[in-house]
Structure formats: C-alpha cells, structure tokens
Image (tube, rainbow, N blue to C red):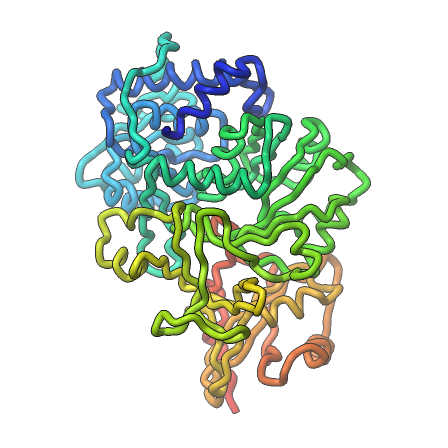
Length: 509
C-alpha cells in the first residue's frame, strides 16, 4: 500500500463526500482524485519519472494537496520546502535534495528567479496559478484531460518524502521516508485520535512541516474525513471556520492557542470541537488549562515528537492530562521511547537524560548525509537531542534541548521549568528562557517576555513571583521585553536568535 491508495479507496467508496475545502472551493473524494490524476499525467508528459525528487515551495492551498498526491502517483519523492526561506537557503535544499522540478506560488516567484541562477544545474519551475517570468511554466498548464490512474507501479518501500529540519544549527538535513513508514504514522495517529468519516479537521499549520503533512493532512485522508485548509493562521478566521464548517478537530502550537485567547470566546460557536491537539514545542500547564476553558472541552492531546520520528514520539491522552498535566506522555503506537545517559543506559526516575526513540515511524536516514545519520541513529535508536525525565509510571517529560540547557555556577537549569513558572503570571502572554554570558557564574538565567496588551511589570515583582516557585539559582537575573518571540515554521522558538540578540549583555560582578 502507498500514500495514494486511501484517496483512491475513498474516491470509489464515498465519491460524493467532501474531502477538501480551500477558500470557496470544495472537492469530493472523486473530484480530488480525478484532479490529481490530471496533474499526474501532466508530470509524466513533462518527463518526470519514478524516483525523481520534486520540490514544492508553496503556502497552504488546494494546489499543494493536489501537487503532493500527483507527485506520489507518478512515483516521485515530495520535497516540501519552507516558504519563508531566502534564495540562498532554498538553493541549498534544491541542490542537496537532487530536485528536478520546483512547483511554487506566484508570490514566491521573485525568490525562485533569484535561486535558479545559483543552482549548478538549472531546473524547471512551475508557478501557481500562472507564471510571469519568461522560461517558467504555469502549474495549471500541467493539467491534462486524463482522469484515469497513471498505471505507475508503486511499492510501500518506495521513497515518498524528504522533510528538511529547520536548520537551527548548521545546514538543514533532509529526513527521508518511504510510503510504508508514513502510513505507519497515519495508522498510529488514527489509533490515538480515532478519526473517522464524520471528522472535519482544520489545517492551519504549514503543510511543509511534518505534523501538518503526515499527522493532519494524510491521516484525515486516511480516515475518510474532511480537511479544511487555511493558507495562513489568523485566529479570528480559524474560529469562523470552526463555526461555519462544524470543525471537530484542530492541531496547533502554543502561539496559536495564545492568539485564540486574545479573541473573546463567546463570539463564536465552538461546540462542534471533539478534541484539540498541540505539539511541536512545549505548552505550559497554565496555557493548556486556559485553552481547555476557551474551547469548552478537556479533550486535549499532547503530541511530543520530531520530524525525524515521522513525526513520532510520545503523547498524552485527555485522561492522562487529568493526572499528568505538563508531561510529554508515553510512547505512541509502533514506538519505543527511553531516557538514557551518555552510555545509553536507562536513567532512574527523576534523573535527567536524553530522550531516544525506536520504531516503525522513524526516518530511513538523512538524505546523502551518512555521517550525520550514523550519529543520529545508533543501534536502531534515534537520538533526539532532547533532555527529559521519566517517572515511576513511565511518563516522560521533556525539560530542554541539550544545546539550550543553562549551566550557572555549575548547576543545571532547565529552561522549560522556569518558563512554566513565569507563564503562570497573569501579566505575561508568552515567555522563553535562555542562558546569557556571566563573568562570575559562566552563564546566568534570562527571561525574554511578551507582556499582555497594556500591561506593565516591575522586575522585582517578577523575581518575588519566581522565588515562590523556584530555587534561587533558577531565578532569572535579567528580564528582556519584546513584542513577539522569533519562531520557525513549526512554532518552535528560535532561542539561538535570542542568544545572539541578548547574549552580549554580560553581567559583571
């Protein structure tokens, strides 16, 4: 079985059921499958063959969904790319992935023009809806009149996608997955969330990210449900969509839930929501509880994984939220998880170690990076680079990234613990914690804060608040205020940017 089979099955089983909504357009399973086939034949007509890598440089849209399926139907490998990248960053990925064609949005055409001249070997570019640049194709010109299946034979073990990590340290690496592995992700997520044909999933996270692509988009299609796709995330528009389409499920990152809380909750009918999910970055217990109250449900799931895992890792069910709020959870189906020391030995409960994974949803390798692959996959275990603890019942809690841990005066400070305390302050909208150089302690703790609108706060007030909940060495010695926190496309805060901005502010003693 390959990733196109669920679409074809539902096209025959429930042909008239609406499966995709984008802006004012609706597609049934039958019409979407036929549209995909039209473009798949267009790719074949342009010389695309099995195993070719095709880059998709688009924001969320129906064209993105159609392009992905068309690529898979001809046996191609999807290379989704962050639409926020610069020409230099885009050039690196196109070259490193061996992409032979790029499909891109019209609003990104200028970046495409800039990048094509940087590539060692020029590749065709198809712009949606139409191209302005001489020599570029129009994506819609790839559409043919042929609605029959392509006849290309696919194997579950054929490569399906290369997902590039966010590249917060060094060049991004491409996690390679085959069809079978991604289907395992779909089955695992469907087992957890129990999606069905009646579910309507609102997709606002960028599809180039693994959670939106593999967990939301493909699992919704796997289950026969309906996918409502938004090009960007706007809290009010998302709330309108929930009311209009009777959305039952939603996945978001902490920043999205924070944005919802700024909109009066009584403005929209959110009673259709069956469950909400969050992930990609830690979400504080205080924000989780506020979000539960906002959406009027305690049916929240935490998905704690990483791109290289499919994404796969651990999860916290709604029932477990009642007893283990703040934990990452226990392993997802098809996944083993451990917390180990430097010798790959299991740590004792409460001791901090590295969170590692093994299972059927993991990447095959980093594409064309054997050394990095060997360092990341050791004896079949995926080393995540996340620091975590495990309790007596097996619940794992992420406490920090290895590179983000603060060592102040020889004491380890885990930023997540400090962030969760500050996040409970009534005047703080968002906060992150970093280490900054300190001539006496080596590093000291600093908090970077986004205040709620029209709020002001005194530094001593913050220190007194922290002192009630934290040991003295964990209390931030500096507080910086910003209008917003820098994030990558998956919602993770870019702490290295903040360290560059504020790390020069050395405390002298």
